[in-house]
Length: 427
Ligand code: FES
Ligand code: FE
Image: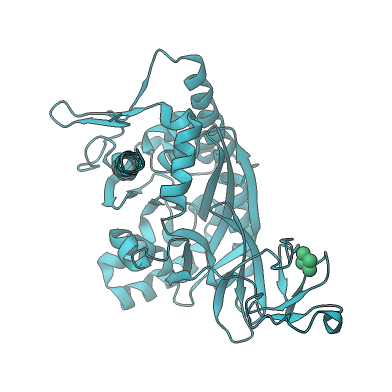
């Protein structure tokens, strides 16, 4: 059987075959075995706080409505009319009691029930929907600390079991404010001409930070970011189930999701106050971890939370082996004053927003990889052996990325052996 990941523990060598970034058949298997079976992030509960609120989402290649019905229940409803399939909602977000289809004007409640069909009286008497024409709902929807996920496999394990060790890091994000967290602005949407796994990998790759984002760090240093102090200090961890994290203190400083140079001295009073409250609630050690550390968290397969500078959430999905669509959101502590909120938004847009510094740099790097795979086919393997190890123990070499690849390999090779068995049975 073909191997996609080769791990030689003795020589600390870890290789990933480049076909996983370019092969159409592999992408089809990924859709079936990964995106149809893993928990995928759909949104944050703060995005739909009131009954009737909805946002339109594309998750795992499906058009969904992330809604809070009149009954207060959060749902993921397929945005596809049960008549002839048109999207029943064309708005990106809003509040409504009814979704009315543009095509023949069937209408559905915000819980998905069919409540209106023009000309219904003229339909044959035997026509009786009995609920069968309601909008379909994704049956598996679960939430952890207001992060909401869906799963298209009804037999999937629970979200909490799936998240496993990653829960601790979601807690560290969610605990940053006693009032809770909220998603700000509208999402940022963009595409990258690169394989989706390059972004999963990049999100926990500390090694690329300084060279790829050199321009940004130079600017940071002009604003008192103290880049001269140098290296990142921290750990990179394989959290199991394909999840991974890099947690570190950085020379730019970052108390409680606030990037110091952008906050200035006025912000310090507020930061001290938050820190004091967190210490009272969680004790000094945990409060320090919440307030002082940066976290790049990867939840397998395609959710990235950058708890660095401003806090960002990103998801992505492959359209082709070498092309993905990305959606990014800014997350913040509730109750911030207006000026600090403005600074946070500036920092989000300036750093991870698609027109900022970090994202175009990263996209450039990922697109160069994708180009390189096509132009340099005699080199068949990517090397995940060497990485950034600074403070002890910033883990073994690239352990966090390897965690992702181990899970990926397990899913793909199991799916291959299953297919082989199926073929044998058929044969
Ligand atoms: Fe929606 Fe006909 S497709 S009413
Ligand atoms: Fe980057």
